[in-house]
Image (cartoon, rainbow, N blue to C red; front, side, top):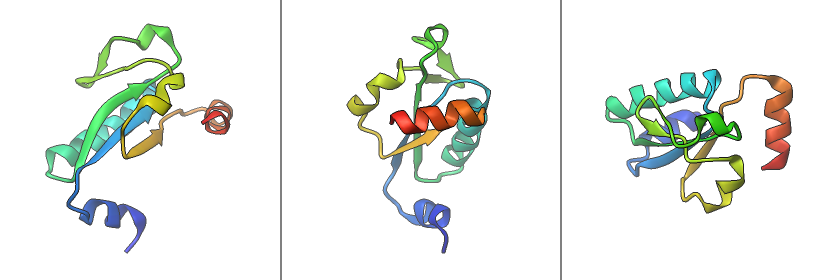
Length: 96
C-alpha cells in the first residue's frame, strides 16, 4: 500500500492546507474537493499565499487565509505545496 492509499484508508479526517492559491494550487484543491465529495477522509481548510491579491478571498469555496508566514499558526494535518514554478516552489520549500 502506497502513502496515498494509506492516507485515504485511515478513517480520521485529515485537515489539508494548500500553500499557493494560484493555478497549481487550484488544480490540487479541485482534486481534494473531489475526494472530499466522495467521502474520503479529507477536509480542505484553505490556502496560504504571499500574494496580497488573494488574501481574504475564497477559491473554490475555501478561504485564502493570508501569507505563508502564518504556517506555524495553522492546525492542519497536511500541507501541500501547490506552486507550479520549479524555482518558486523550491524557494518556498526551503523557507518552510
